Image (cartoon, rainbow, N blue to C red; front, top):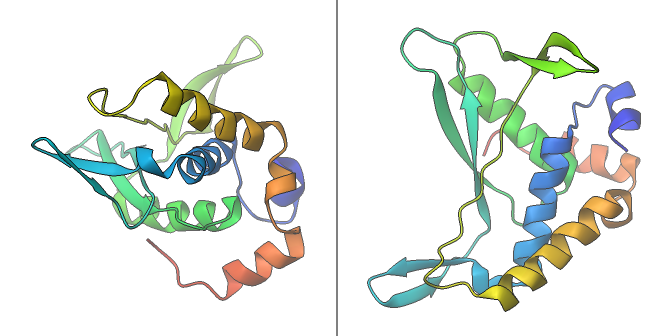
Length: 160
């Protein structure tokens, strides 16, 4: 899936697929998507993920971007991230990583997820991870066809 969309000029990485899988996990267990204030829990109206981006500028090394991922395909999510991160960066988007025993420069977009332990128990995590695993095992089964996804992205406003 990643390779075919990359050949077509769309940058879709494992990070985007994992983010979409996390979205599936929150869709599967909506009670995880809450804001805790004091001793009360308030359901969130949207599923939003926060992405950390390396800036490589003199003023800051890292920044972040919150993206509304509610009902977005992996390709829509990738497009929103691309536009959002481009707005944050003042320098290169490359980090050095080891690939097949060699150090190479590659684009990187780390993904971090935080879940409040005061609210979540093992049952929630188990159900959420089932949704995450289901998406990661066969993302193409849960995404629209490539042509449909491109059509949606072409008509979607850029950014968050």
